Length: 80
Image (tube, rainbow, N blue to C red; front, side, top):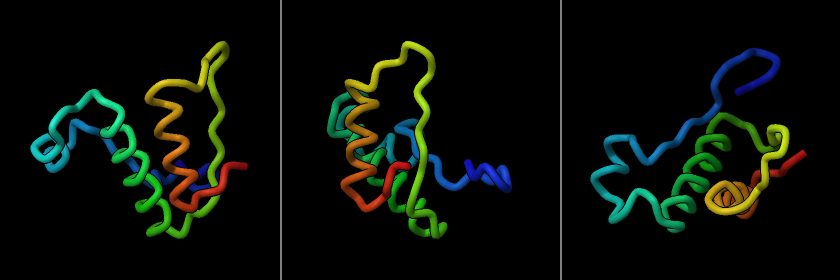
């Protein structure tokens, strides 16, 4: 979500109809990479190349969340 305008920049979920029918599993690590790549692509389409992620209190960045964030960064989005 864009802080200045409150506009949603990009959303991706495995529950989307097109992903649900094409992915072999909706819970493995490869699917987290697909979601991260989609978020990065959609952000670039909206001319957003830098994002900030603020973890909640006591939230650990690991597992699928870590994979998604790493994939977003590998696809050209800068974390500030």
